[in-house]
Image 1 (cartoon, rainbow, N blue to C red):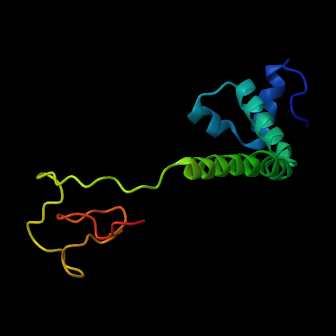
Image 2 (cartoon, helix red, strand yellow):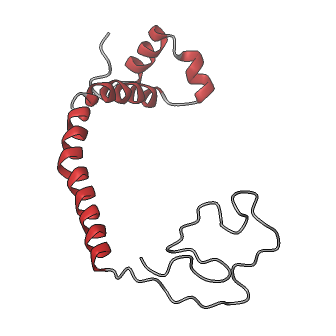
Length: 130
């Protein structure tokens, strides 16, 4: 028996539900027979709509994502070139770079990811040039 082609008869829906063994499930979910058939029809229709999705996402990746990332990279690169790379003047503030005990690595005065050009020690920068 074909699925409900017209939204007409509830008798046809009930016959279809009985033949498919959905009556116990219907009583648990308390859905109307028309809703059950419509739900199943929509679920069956959704399976066939996935055919061109991978191709669509592949095209979108090449047409939108790669140029978008390239423009963002170019923007960051150009801003980096325009930025001055001079070392900031060291000001020995008393509330910064407090060492109450030594770090457990190295000489105990350098942080774990220490950069001598950008991270100052309590007494100033290690290098004066960049």
